[in-house]
Image (tube, rainbow, N blue to C red):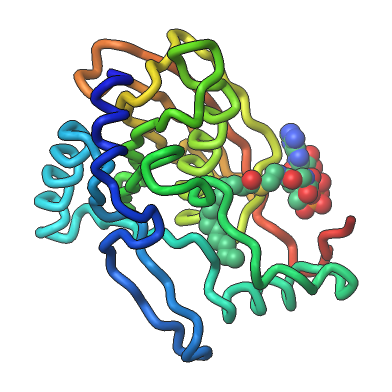
Length: 229
Ligand SMILES: CCCCCCCCCCCCCC(=O)SCCNC(=O)CCNC(=O)[C@H](O)C(C)(C)COP(=O)(O)OP(=O)(O)OC[C@H]1O[C@@H](n2cnc3c(N)ncnc32)[C@H](O)[C@@H]1OP(=O)(O)O
């Protein structure tokens, strides 16, 4: 697994020059966004197959591929700051990057998420790169938690709008081999007022191995309470 992973990475050119859809922000002509939830040369056959399968499922509109960017759109940051941040915190975020997208192409998290809003599900197809090692040959638990948080967080966001993780409970059942592909499968359980409950499991592509199980509690942010340092 590690050897084929290294081979794919060697065939990559400049990590930042990968092909991918780009979108120009409406408010800033200089701000260019690349959509990272699209195949690049570091993607394994397994990840491409899952991507192709689900792109087919998107044709009837039941599933949607979720684009993914390194940085938030300036107008979204502005909106978030205005609604939820203490004014003393509202600076410096323009250059911030989304953590799961901050490693170079192929080395960290390569993933694409698909959602089904009727079934209230978000799936994440994830390839775990060589810079996510914990125990030798296996993925770091914190890296797994990151993608569980991101996937369940997206599931909660689609149901409840802007949320923050209040509780994440993970059972690690079997280790994830480095450079493999796994499926993070999240399901909205219930919404009670501002509380959004989501459950999740992480399995191998052939579904035979259960790697992790998790539950998450997300709280819809209250515009009357600003976030403080
Ligand atoms: C910019 C565009 C963004 C797009 C995003 C796309 C998605 C991306 C996904 C990214 C994913 C990554 C995401 C990340 O990485 S989020 C980063 C990690 N999370 C945090 O840092 C959150 C830190 N915590 C807080 O800021 C506050 O505690 C929050 C905001 C969560 C709630 O403080 P708030 O003052 O607002 O609410 P409240 O205290 O009145 O509580 C309200 C209710 O909730 C209940 N409660 C609270 N906590 C817990 C708990 N731990 N267990 C059980 N219950 C809990 C509480 O009892 C009460 O219940 P009730 O008395 O009403 O019955």
